[in-house]
Image (cartoon, rainbow over all chains, first blue to last red):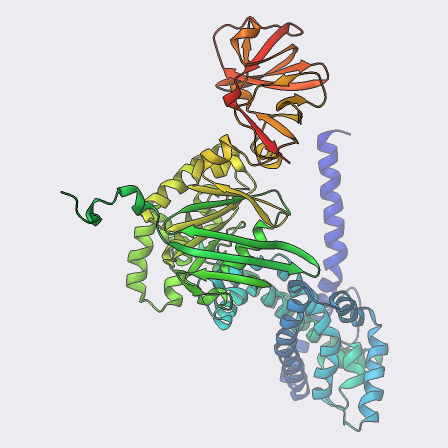
Length: 263
Length: 369
């Protein structure tokens, strides 16, 4: 094959992958821009009415508040626990470490709907009323292992001699942690935080079982799809998806800025 | 008129017998039943450049980590300026280590790295900067490196930054854990000399570990050769080079001729693997079996048997150019001998040529073991 032909093929393949990945998200955007009450493709009449209606709805505002609160709490708790978990996972050699590594990672592979049901049964058994607060706990069960893994990747590349050197140069254990361990591992912690927030933000199966009377955006979307579809569903879907993308891009931009300022 | 001893006339040499800054007394580190460091006794003088050399697994890293306070000694004493410091953690010891990986803080600039120990001591930023710039200058780094990220420094520059950071701590003793092992040959040779110069400028005590005796020879005042947790021999580079204590030390030095020999009844030394009696300068007491060691530069080509005290006939097998010297491999029967001489413009030696090689008794060493 000629060099030109090969390059054309690579481009075509890349384009196909991009279309496959991003066209569905784009369709959601298009579906939200209809003036009609029903889901009809191609769109007959364009309009922004459903966007206005959606944002005026108090119910939707409550959904956003719930989803953001849950995701934020999950992020804070998950990062703190997973950070120390990652140190145990990847930094220190201790008896039982390999067992710990397997046990910690296992919940990632549990079917989430089963995990959600199990948690619901358990909350019932010990008499806890399910609400957005129990959902935080449920999310944590699945998200802490993921974040532990994410931060561990950074910890694996951490040279333990850095801590020894700081200690040797007179720093106390706390100073070593604050001046060396924490800042050097910060990129891993930040990506862990993004993972925690976004995985919680988009989580449906665990929320379905464990939020009780409260609702999150994914849970509401599902309910509306099952019964009572309006173009408000793709509006919310678009906001949810593009919000997550913006958050990620913003984070990436901040990291790049910081890196540029350093050098 | 005879008087009492004149104390003012004490020869200067006695002054060089400085008191030890660091004393190790039967220092041991055990891992289970295995002694990584097996009862080491050693005095290191103030201002000395002392190098511990040994192959990997000899316990040298464990030893230096104990001295720096990163590893707890199992038994024995570490005495610094008269005080036992076994139980002091690394951050309370007035010593500092330059690590093999250098352990520069990647999230900080060159200046911040150097200032780290000063910041920990609570010295104000202005003073810290003055000190850091002085150290940059001392280590031949330009002042604009102060704000440079350590990730953008070359290998040699990173070495200098690591050393500057350790010097900023102003330690009583500086430990080095093979910091030059990952550096290419040419730069390593430069940095070895530079380190020796810095040692002289600062007057501090340096304790260095390496697996390269060649590196140790270049820099050290004294060398300790380590094997299996023990110091086999301690001495000046010259002593280690010219009178190795045993086969291990002599072979550690690089290419060397080692002939298994025994003593027969009439106090003569004969080779074990071929028929030859050697003339040697001194025979150690109670010697019965051991090795005769001859450095390749002391073996020379001769034309007649009377030109050297020990002469062997062999065949020239190959020659290797080593820069300013040429090394020849000569085979005497099944035995391989190495001869080194300075490069000359013309050489008449040919492969497979029969040659006579010889050395004088004073140039060979008889070692037990």
